[in-house]
Length: 82
Figure: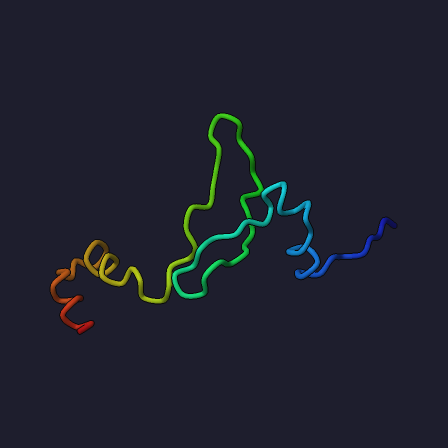
């Protein structure tokens, strides 16, 4: 029966090889600042990938969702925010 020790999240995030190979990357979050996160595990030579932005903050896309998906005018959504 094959068996191996499983690394903790802290060990994986702190592993220099994981950073060098792009499995852990750092993104700038608008509230938290620089945040390490999982990189993209699939590498394609003709279509390279990259993580360009961090996850949005809560409610960041409410106006777009209400307008584009629900048909609520942008003015209605933005006036309720104020």
